[in-house]
Length: 82
Length: 166
Image 1 (cartoon, one colour):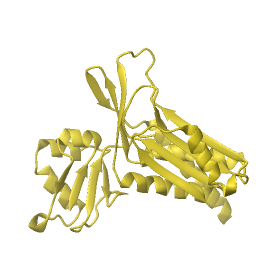
Image 2 (cartoon, one colour):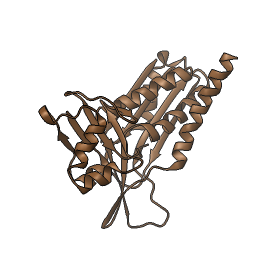
Image 3 (tube, chains in turn purple, green):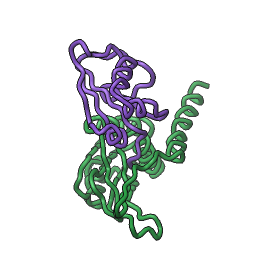
Image 4 (cartoon, chains in turn orange, red):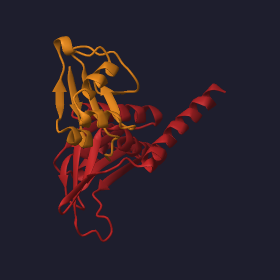
């Protein structure tokens, strides 16, 4: 499973993506958030942002969602294009 | 209906894009109206230290999100063609950022589709702007006003649905 980070979230974490597979594969978004939060203060701070957006397979998701091995998850701040 | 969505680093030519839009509008004589919008990198008044923007995007999701907006626009209004071009990367003050064009038989559909597409692009497509000054850079914060502008269209859709049900 690929997890991607963009814009201010990417900069705060110092990484654009990470991978989860095998035993470490989270079953759902809540489990993924927990696994990421265990990686340190920067992750905990980002995940606590009230306006953080989460997308699963390139569609925005609110709340929890089941995850599988081939899924692509992304975390990013509110969009500011146009 | 003719449509296009391009995400690119290169600059674009608004006249050429309008010509492409009209060429795709039923042979060029079916359109009675074309509305276009070009967004530019604005230098804050008197801010000489401002050097421009960097625009980041989420490859793949960006194209999907824009296509979904164009689908939505095509369902709401009677259009002959609609197109979006959005630049990414480093952009200097005055540079073109985004272009939206809508061609229709009548101006009401063209105006509305163009404005709707811009409002949804700003709030639904995964692009992020970072502003740069000499020695400093800052991510642009999402603006309440942009969300309010986009929300107007949800209200409009609800009204249409309600009146149809009556």
